[in-house]
Image (cartoon, rainbow, N blue to C red; front, side, top):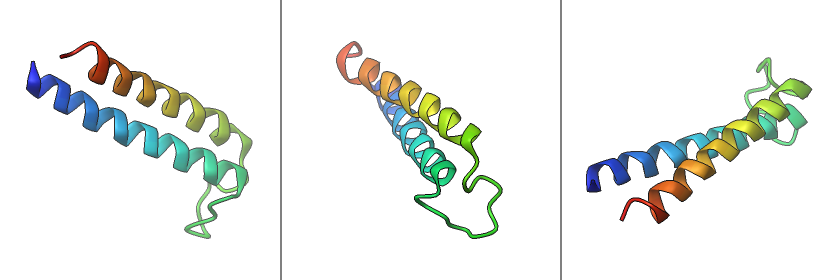
Length: 67
């Protein structure tokens, strides 16, 4: 059970960070790299937010329910 908790924690963190990055690029807050197709594109704001929320939920489940 400990291995599952570690794997889910890492997965949740990666999804949370990726979602935040996508949302930041979609809003234009983080315009790097300059040639990215995601910069100032509103669909990436929603997609990033959804991925970030799923990542946060996975983190919450891993930390609270898998003890």
